[in-house]
Image (cartoon, rainbow, N blue to C red; front, side):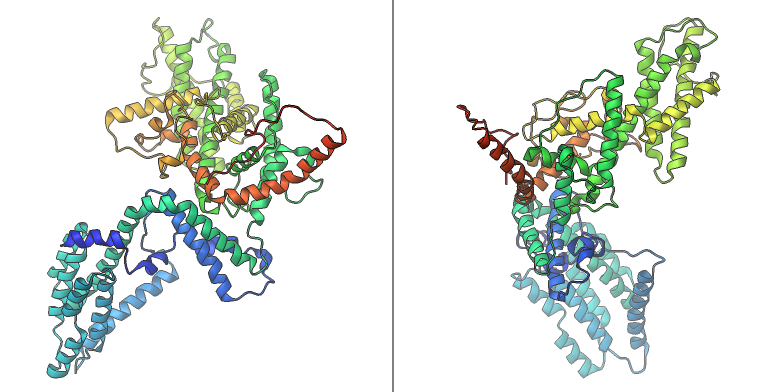
Length: 634
């Protein structure tokens, strides 16, 4: 009977639909500035208009969270222990139960609070039942008939609270999820009926949460099927509500796409424009620095990216990976702000780690004679350098993920750990050489490090490490450029079937695969999904992992102790980013197309006038492709 009731809740929904919708998936105050920006402070609007816009935004965000987050669930809001809210909440709850106890202990006994208590319990139980479940509703009415209770009070002057408690426990046992059976049964062991009802109320609240989350989990596939249409409809309502009070609901989105367009067309950027953000300046500095690094390393520059619609939108998405949360985020991506910012942090760690390995290994190779001054020339073969790279990976991963609260301390600790890793490696090299053995990375580092780098080398190496950590080293700019290029290919409307891993990131592939293989062999935990978005949103067959296998194979693995090495994989990053952006593009494509068209229309008009004036005609029509058309699949 209980399982049947539980299944019916999923098929037909619950009468607590309104309450479920009121659970905040996103902080209302946090995103209020995106519903009505500061620019409308002088605009008069009604509370109904405010509520209409906020409600549309909230419903859209709730559906979006259910769609993209496989682990999304509704949780009880618990204020901080020392907060005023928590203090008031505890005081009011305690006052309610103290009043009930005092009414039962008074002479004569006041049973009015008891009747109100039974009414609250009855309403809570009815909220667990579907509107069409008449039999269950009748069962609740018969078990907790308030008219019978009042008649009993009038005739005898007494209400048997223990008898009603037994009825409540029996009903809860029928309606609860199997996981709550023991908690419900434990209510029978509480002697004081007031305390038992107090615990029953807390358990009923958990049952409502269980039902809501169980329903969400089972309707998630349907919500995903309807996500694009629903989010687009709600966003339209959101824009209409803002338009009613004279607000441009796409102001930040227009500025964001214009920023991407101006990056592809620097000559068209207005002089003295105030719309340029810190991201643009950082991008320009990074581009100039990486260009210098490219020239030093003999790397040729690719052809400039044409400002086609697809390219503009792709560059706009890439801008978000380096955007701070303090900047204004576009209205169309605010629901994914934390996710995209987290992926941007992951990208920064990947670039820093790969840059550190390249810089340190290059420094060691260039200064081998100074590192081993009292010995004959030490030949650093491939096995030695591979061991150094793996040692640096382990040390840098721990250092970069250990803590990110105090930047100065983290920077110093990271440099110290990397230098110590180099000294350990040099110690192994010297031990193998002194014993006349071929080099092996399994040589134990027993005790303290007996080989210490000369102070001048340490200071020089520390300076270069700090430059990488501060994002000012040319190699860091170059690696960032390569990583963005990899993601740019992955985000193309027609990506190649296999995307080669950029040079310099291969060592991360080896380290990641070794760590995951070791974790799987040790059975340290269950598989961890790379993303909560349904797989049909991710183009299959287009993206390969670092090691050449499909990205889906590498995106499911186990965590390695406290350090998730998958976070240092570019393919893992791309596999998490692609579904988010694919859904965003599906939902907001029509608005993106309109904004981009308004940016390109003046240029196209100018080009058409130029061609007409020169009377140039071509016998072959232009082929429609990604560079000339803007396709937004819905």
